[in-house]
Image 1 (spheres, one colour):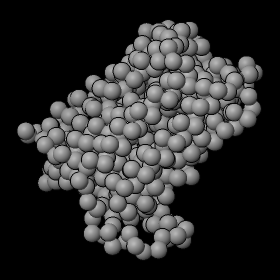
Image 2 (tube, helix red, strand yellow; image 1 turned 60 degrees about the vertical axis):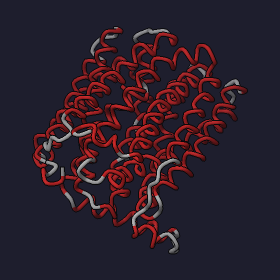
Image 3 (tube, one colour; image 1 turned 90 degrees about the horizontal axis):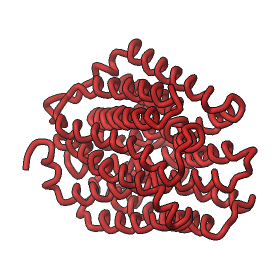
Length: 421
């Protein structure tokens, strides 16, 4: 086997790939179920604010744990970190499912729900950079771009199915039953990671027995931030992604199901047929990126993806019809996957192994900022209404992305050197 599919020869990569695909299935199932549960039980006068507080809880959790998680991934056995995190995610998932099964949306239940959501997001923010950091360990620099693209293909094959069946699962099993169903995926992911024969680097082994308190963790995080700030390409790639996600993600993803079910007027049972096109677009982009895994102009692909995402956001909110939501979601999926895969490959190529976990955790802060922005977006939406606010956000996203592309040419010119392919 050669070319784009060469990473599949690696046994550890196959297990890592399957675990990633399972995780991609769980994300929309859990997130959409949370949104619709809160939307169903929240008081009418504050339902939009409480829906937004889901993303706020996730964002705070990611900020609280994300940078520390990257530092852990640079110091300890990355496989063991994943096993511990997945086990703890089963606990938080079971807790949220029990709330959904047995509560009726009283104040105490909402408090516990948001606390568990915060903890779950914190765990995911450690899982993400650890998985991204372990991939080059498993494949080596030459196969990492193809491996990243295959990761996305596997994940995006699963995601449209998850989006499609989420509405059906909720309709058939209820909110709690659908959320509880996701524990099976976490167990399968643990099995996949446990079967890997991955061994940590000598440097990680030597550090494992050393004291690692708050001061050491703070110093590691500080060094990672200094490294990112001193590398102009990495810095502006992160700024571009943060700008795109902070203004684009709250409306299209965090509040996307709310837009589709309230403004567009799609029934919950049929909502999956609309939002699944985000996954379809992601799959199309991931397959194309697998086919052209050896391309070195990753900066150009990154900015092209950011522009596609921004323009699709404009189309998504330009009219309140299912066709706009479908085509918009398709473009959003293409743009986001192209941007994220290209930027991740570029950063993995530019950053040495001893900093990789920390830089990937900084990079993934874009999701934390995006989720935190959901609350001010919801507050403004409650005041202005979503049909007024979302087009303003779409234009702002497109303007910011365009300005960064024009005035920071090093981003669009950034390449993965052919010698490392």
